Length: 337
Image 1 (cartoon, one colour):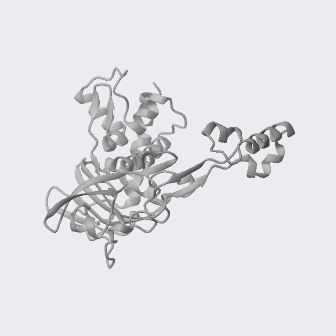
Image 2 (cartoon, helix red, strand yellow):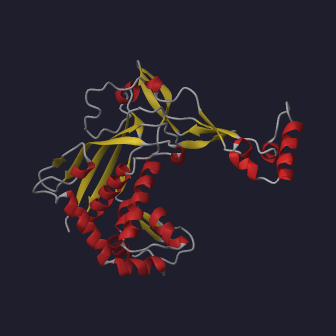
Image 3 (spheres, helix red, strand yellow):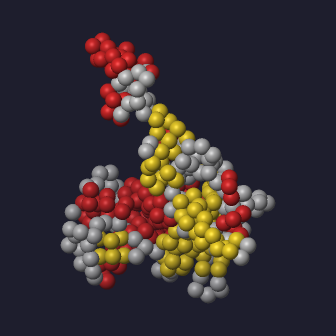
């Protein structure tokens, strides 16, 4: 089976607040930021720029790829070690797996997910074939300083880069956890419990409350998120190196499923955060002779539709499904043992 390298440049535009946390300051989740050295007017300065880490983007792709893989293999229930292998690549300790070339080759063939995203199980370390850039805002500063990995692609045609100061929402987004006190369900509480809650609330009226006191009084606890503002143009580049068509299909189908499911990135998706509009600005497959081959852009369905070079998207998806189903018994034996 021949091997090729692929490059996908994604335009990602959040249609709701994008919250990708890097810790908490009290009840407020702080945004993930990266510090870049930038030359401005001949002088070097450091800029802290909100973005989504490449690790988070890769984990999102891996989750969609892993769920499809298990579905095709007919696995509806899996133990902790099996889940850890598929979705996290295994574990460094406690595995008896040896570092053998033949074993690594066998696992790469059985588990395209591991081959694409990598594995590290005991002494068995498989480097993933996929490299993912951070998801970086496309602004006047990041474009001018070359901080956006465009891989030679034209992104957001006809649109000027965003003014850099507009990346983040001006104020954190604050929520209050739903409490029984403001709910119609409060009527279901026994009268004695209702009275105890009300007595606690009255007793501390006008006084600062601790977390435990708030909980006992059944009051809402505010929590806030720093966020990348909806509408912020962002760019991410995926590079898949030395991959066969089954491995390429694994990534392409994960990408397709992610886009089709709403393109969610970051946290708090249950609150509607992180939904993104995604456009493939460029997709290339590099062949061994003749150099880069451009692929139709703008639609995930056209990822592999270069006539005479790659099979059509539907055919490739079928080949991937056939490959996993043909090896389903061995896959189940490996994961369920």
